[in-house]
Image 1 (cartoon, one colour):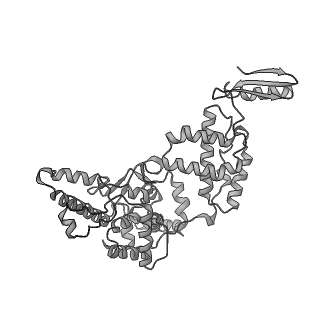
Image 2 (image 1 turned 90 degrees about the vertical axis):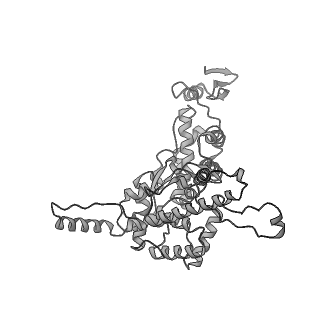
Image 3 (image 1 turned 90 degrees about the horizontal axis):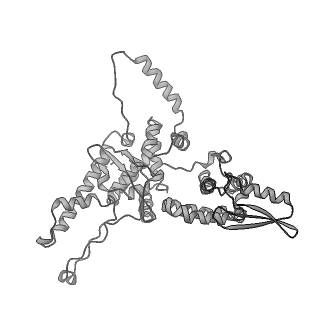
Length: 419
């Protein structure tokens, strides 16, 4: 129980904090001691400890909650944000004394320093979540980082996307097919499905439904670890006919190569074809190129050496191949993530529904889709009204027309191939 006692010419507030540790705070007057006693008894009688700094609470929160409940990539991002942005600003301040004004000043400073809207949002996210947990644990009475989004409005120059045009995408895929055949299926998949880089690396043949013509995106590879997709949600992404055929051929080659390797084993060690194919379906869809070992006398005397490659892709190496292919195609250097933006922009420019694009991209809300890509459809609303007027004028009661979603392949050209 929290109490006030007098020691000499000071009044001592004696209490146990939310972690069960005993605290004694000296105050000069009885009134000050009473005010402090009222503070520690807030939140339904739970005791609030005010001596811990923002850094002390943040480090403890990361260890107790972050490591066990956050994805590893999110945990690393939160830790970096706290160390690089939050702690330098007010890490030594008392945790329960941090004000909304201080958080607003931090936002203003980061914007003034040229940070993007998303960067500022990522800085505030762990701080806000940390205080939400503190309130639940009665370690804080309010959240200074809540509802501060209006101080971080999107600026026009903040939209950092650089999608390829349909002509540029055509040139890129043509060079990729000719000079990087191992990476061509992935380079085709990225801009025609909008799947993220880590999600592409985490795809397996079993995720591809060739009959239904869709890909089930259900995992992501980040920093070498397999996790769930962003937002923790799986989704189905439609495939064009061309992509379906390319991936079907890729999986068939993988099965043939695996069966060929199996046939090189002694007869008594060989597995049935079904078991070999099942293993292929559970392996990675996009892998590093297989490099056959050089044949020489010494190699032939021993057991045949296994080919190198056929392993999970490394994001850094993948980007190097991507940029090299752009250079060979005579195109400007863009980010790999801009292939995702290319998918969205081409669909919207051809009149596809933002709701459909949202579902394909796996955005949390349609507002995100509109915020990022809405400016890429100049005059889109006027065109929609024109089409509506034309449809109404030309409609006949007995007429009906089946509708369906277009694909990026149809935007590039009405054929079935890019080359």
